[in-house]
Image (tube, rainbow over all chains, first blue to last red; front, top):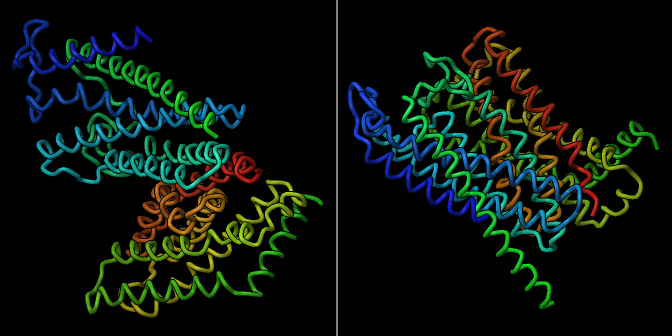
Length: 234
Length: 224
């Protein structure tokens, strides 16, 4: 885990500094200049943080679902510990994606919240996490808590494709890839970033994913210790 | 006991015990009346648009469903009959019996709300494209029942059932709610049948995915 720890710290520090300090230029000449995107200008830098954080929130949800599935198959409580630790981190990243997105929306689209399809999706993801933890606190025995919350996260997972693939196509929205977008509607947005921005963007994706892996590892080890303590006291 | 005859027997059991107390039916009906009356007080003499009306229509259906549909499993837990059911029937039999029972309940609820709406909003709530409305109500009821049945099974095992049920169901039902509201508005605006086809595709896909997923996962919820 040393790799994930130092890797994420290095990458995120680099992305933060590079993303903020590289100047914009209408006609970029070299690698140390970002292009000016009409309508976005300096605000375009947020894509280097907002998108990786939102991506990590989705990865965390899938990881939590996967460990929930493993728990149902094996009934090994360690998978439940992993599943709930990933869900907690997912909630954190989901919250960060909402904040960075709402701030960006305020200065680019005029208001903090517009009920664009992706904003609706992240709102639903926040609600799912909230419901997931509410359910866990309402169940007493640990086997039931583990099994039922795993089932719930998988039932919630069934609706995810509708948000990713169906809704952006039928609802008009502000994010790229929505209905009526001149670049075409769909889940995969055409990458039209300048190469240097794209490199920093991809490093950001990798950095935040590594951060998730490292934090998950720390949380799982902590949760295992707490679990051992609680079972020894009984 | 075969799967079909078992499902049929379980539905008969649920219908019998429901008709004996009429708990769910009376509660649901009173809830519908109360909710529609509240909306009438709030709107006073305003003339709501078709999108507002179809939104409010499904708000009433959602909260009515949330007040009644969890009964199917909660009542088994309260009466201590869960164990017996586990012994006499396979999980999939129980699941499909409860799903069908909830579908019938949801469908009759939407009929009740429709009749009430047509009476109290006789000027604004006029169904111009009946085919869209019928399709929306049938497919919407199916989707509603499939999502709320599996959540009811989960909630029945928890402590705070009443408050937990809408909290768990809402995120799952948002896709469905947005689609049925959209399609109902189209039926009130008198649009052509084919304009609602994308909505119907979503509703069918939602029902199939939710029922298939619930069928596979129900065993883990049901067996202790």
